[in-house]
Amino acid sequence: EITQPVESNGVFVIIPHEVAEKVRHKYFFYPWNEAISEYRLMTSWDTTEDDIKEFIRLLKKELESA
Figure 1 (cartoon, rainbow, N blue to C red):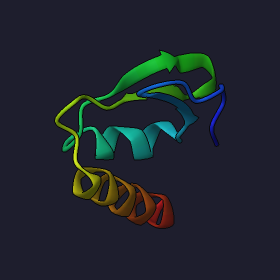
Figure 2 (figure 1 turned 90 degrees about the vertical axis):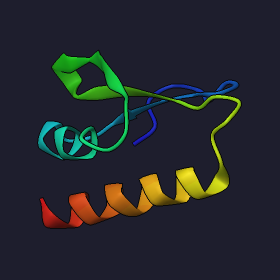
Figure 3 (figure 1 turned 180 degrees about the vertical axis):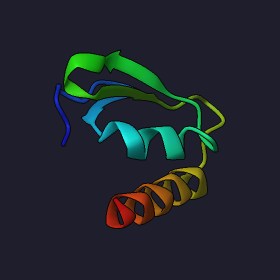
């Protein structure tokens, strides 16, 4: 669930804590509001479309396993 308007290179999302911790082993992001399990996802100038697709693939896999 996206929690805030998407602006430039940041996206704020709700991810179950246990799922986020598994995904964070491969991708760097950090909690924004731990009380609601909200995380801040950022891209940079060198983020590729393949990076984003792989992140989404891993996130979906972990969500399905949870």
